[in-house]
Length: 83
Ligand SMILES: [Zn+2]
Ligand SMILES: [Zn+2]
Image: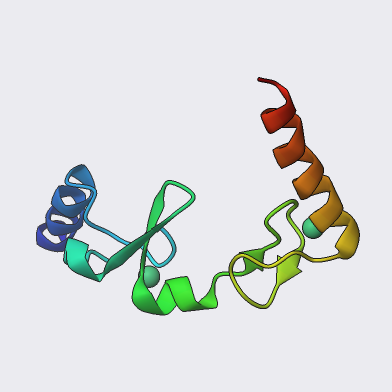
């Protein structure tokens, strides 16, 4: 019915909806990730990626392998040597 469509459209204009399940929510219940907003239940199901690459890891802030740690540390070192 058009009444329901109108309600969802209004929520989208306000940016007040989950990117994954497309349900409108109160903004306080949404979590931002990669410039998209998710509801809490969808956010918990999102894969977490290595700090250095797009490999999946168990916890946020982890690296998938030692070579990624080295690569990341090398990047950080490059920046400080720049000055
Ligand atoms: Zn959702
Ligand atoms: Zn990695």
